[in-house]
Image (cartoon, rainbow, N blue to C red; front, top):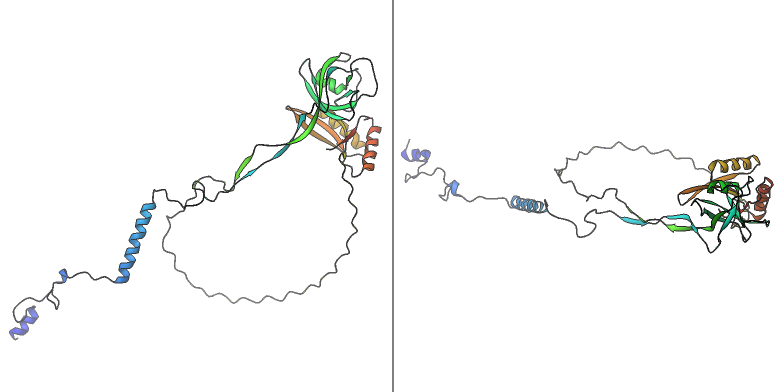
Length: 320
C-alpha cells in the first residue's frame, strides 16, 4: 500500500500531522463552543424564573391586595333579635297599701281587686312583709266592704304567703309588654375562620386525554300534547273581618301550672278551645288561660258570655 494511503488510514496527512479528533477547521471537538437550540433555551429560562418566584413566595406573607387576609371570602352579617318582656308601668297603676284575703276559695287564678281600677290590667303583686311576689290580674272592686281596699284571691294569697283575715302590706304595679333588642350576633358565612390556602402539592402534568366516540343519541319520542284545561271559575272572595285589638278572652293568671291546666280542661268540656300560655318575670313563671282568637266583636262577646256562665265572672278581653 502506498505510504500516502497508509498515512490517511493512520490519521496523518502528507505532513504527518494527526487529524483525528479535529474538524475541518483544525479545532479540537473538546474545545468547540456548545450549540443550543433557541426554543429549548427560552423554555429553560422561563422555568428558572418560575422556580425563583415560587421560592420567593414560600414561607413569605404573600397575599392578594384585596379581601380579608385572615379569612378571605368570609362575609359577615349582623342580625338583631327582638324579644318581648314585661316591664313595670307605675304610671298606669301603682298602689302600696294593705291587702286582705277573706278566706273563701275563688276562681280565676291569681288576681287582686281595687276600687280605683278602670280597665283590667296585668300586674305584679309584692308582699312587702316577706319579699314574695306573683304575677296576676287586676280588676275593679265592685263592692265596698269594710277593711283594706286591696282584695286578693285565694291563689294570690297562697303564692304570697298570706293567711285568711290577716291584712298584709302589698305593692301592686301594672305591667306592660314591650319589645327589646337582644345582643347582636355576628354571623360569618364561612364556618371556619382559618385563612384559605391553595394546595400546590399536586401540580403534576395533566393526564393525557383520550378521545372516545360517543354512541348516537336516540331521538326521544314525541310527547302527546295535553289539551289546556279550562280555567276554573274564581270563587267569590269573602270580605276580610276587621282585626280586633283584643281578640282573646283571658280567664285567669295562675302561679301553679296544675291549676291552669285544670281550668283549661273545664273550658274544653264546655265546648271551648282554651290555650295555656306560660310567661316569666324576674325568673318566676306564671300561666295564663285564654280562649280565642275571635274574628269579630260579636264572636268575642259570645265567648265572654259563655266563659262567665262557667263561673269566671272576672274574665276579660286581652290582645294576646
